[in-house]
Length: 116
Image 1 (tube, helix red, strand yellow):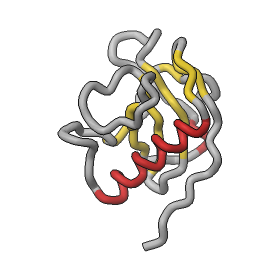
Image 2: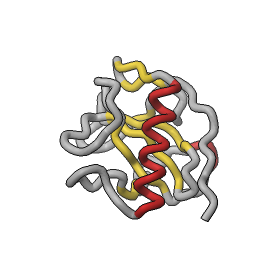
Image 3: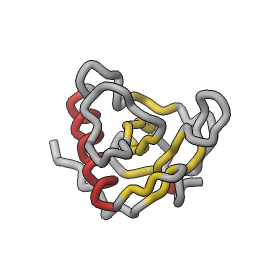
Image 4: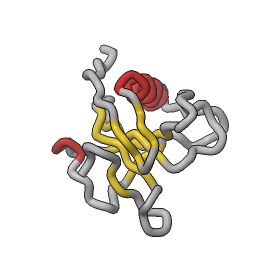
C-alpha cells in the first residue's frame, strides 16, 4: 500500500495558542499513521471520526474526516487529556484544517486561523 504524502503545513492559531507549521505537520503525520493502522494514541479514542456538524468547508475535501489533538505544550499527542485543539485530516491523510473548543458553545468547535 503506498504511503500518503502529506503536503507542507501552515502555521495556525487556536484561541491564544500559536502552532508552527512543523508541529502541525508532525501531528498530521502521527494522526495519519494511526488512521492507516486502525489504531489510537494510548488508551484514547484519537484519532476518531469527526462528523463536521459545524459545517466547515475544509479545503473543499469531501471527508470522511478524523480529528486528532494538538497540544499547546508542543508535544505530539500520545494519549491522556486531549486539550481543546484538534487537527483534522481526511481518510487519505490530507490536512483539512484545525479546530478548537476554545470560544465555542458547549462541546462544539470553531475554526482556528485559516479554517472556515
